[in-house]
Image (tube, rainbow, N blue to C red; front, side, top):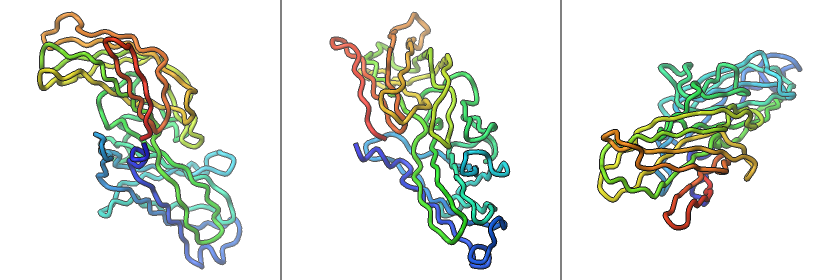
Length: 286
């Protein structure tokens, strides 16, 4: 399972400031810290089907007590070497918490595409109340680092998924090839994510209509989505209903009620429906 842990590899935050800035700075004096966050560009996991799509990284700075520091927010896109670069100004002799969020951006790096960060990284939600499925662009990552701005330093943190990927192997082999419509309705999808604490809150009804291509005869119908998820195993489950309709628009060919499916951050939940054994669920580390 270890091979699933390193989708974005690790991010190294190299923080440094000059002697003039740090060595002789008085407490409370403004200093600039240069941060370079390196990402494994176009990294694809072994035996997996996902490529990193995050193309922007947001940095927000909080005081040690979790309150915002001067509403500090910096957005960076990768440079030619694949690194995100930040140069925040903070006060010497203080303790801070740096919070990082990486996802797919919209038209510009400042534009949210799938996740709404306008209320800050402590209150992230999906851009729409609906659910988008079978789309790797919903993958998202976060990291935190404690910073004491008293001297030159090297900081390290690891980007981990903020989400859980639910994979469903329906066991259903359609009679027709082509585009099948899959409708899914969640009763209690996790609603919000706090990137500072890693906590998930709220529950909302969410629906999705997606297209799944069946390219050749004998292929079973498969589906996936991403949901915010807690770090603890067994602390949260979701319920959802699924139906699949043939390309000709006839009555639903497949229908199933999925109940008490566990979700865990940085894991994929593999759900399979067997004709004899019923529902099987297992978790594998990302």
